[in-house]
Image 1 (spheres, rainbow, N blue to C red):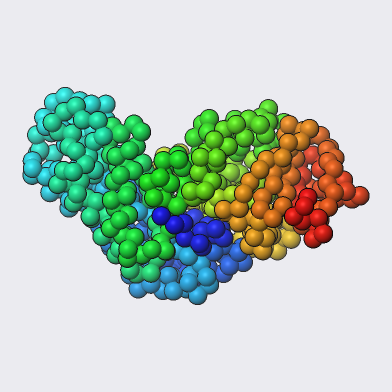
Image 2: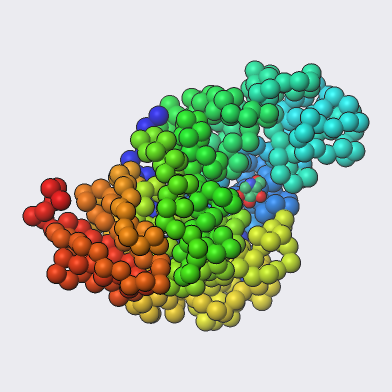
Length: 506
Ligand code: NOJ
């Protein structure tokens, strides 16, 4: 399994379609709206998109409850609109990936409805009696005519598709060789082929680790993915597969090219930006070594096999700006955009859109507050829509227009960092990483390919470090390089490159 070359230079932008731009005035974002706003991505230097689900759905989980995998939800537009978007992206050298939801469907999907009255159908996971539990798995009882309970993957409306069980203790727990599991593997491969044939460049795969149940070391789930990939790779060898898994040692073995460093307490990423006292905030008690201890085992286990990717956030997390002030956000992006792996920026994070405490909408619950419409301008509805009735409320605290006009804005800082990432091959996703020890426990310092060095000081101490044979290519917060001394004031950062004469001997 070869990682597609283009991932090494990719900087992804995650678009939540209902909230990006409403082109037809119905109050909800759509595919044509994304096409219209591609200039924003080009301005930033973005060259890849992950689009959240756009399929036919009752939207009880904002589209992660699918009723037809190959039909676009009317609210987002038509197949022609998608083709127009794909072509427009490709003209701008932007790759476009869709969301694939292999683990479950909507309870209203015809496959599931069929299984509720056909006791022999094993495409979903049914127990063999209406009374009793489901061996520790979440289940729904009393909803359908079938004499059994069905396992769910997430909400009540999301019955789990059957891919078999690793450890089997009951007759209703089928092996991965069962007919239903085989039919599902083929169905998922067919869905992938359908969209890849239309010209998309890959998939972000929802809950990719969830397929085989009672599979503690994920051996059977990994085998299932090999089986699915074997059906699709011969047709589309260059497609990229991005796992929502959170364990790259497993997901890369399963055949994915990159995994997300997800916001899980205790895993290192959370400590950086979403912990109660995040590392990137001034006065946080966390040291660089606390992060390295959690991150390095993942990195060392996977560095030659694929990517472990940092996110600014996503549609399931609270917004970065809810946890960090703007200075800390500047420093986090300096880190995110110079680390290994493929960086993912969630729409609106580049202008510091924040989380709002909103009533739940389409199964969002506390996630709803991170899904509000993109704030484009100071006009009505933040320039998102002409319809007074928008998908979710719009806010006026920040917008793209103001950020573009301010050379020191977060948006323009991110743009500069993306430019460095594109123009310095040493910063590409697969280039090596070594942490550099410094006397200040709250300086994050590391060396990437071609001798590029990154220093980020999140402490309250001014720190000076020897730095002979280097040139400053980026500075933030007053960091300076004079007489072979790098001076890092509190909350500052610098990116250095070896001077031509000193490289590669430095
Ligand atoms: C993870 C997705 O990111 C989330 O939004 C969704 O609710 C669940 N998977 C279920 O599909």
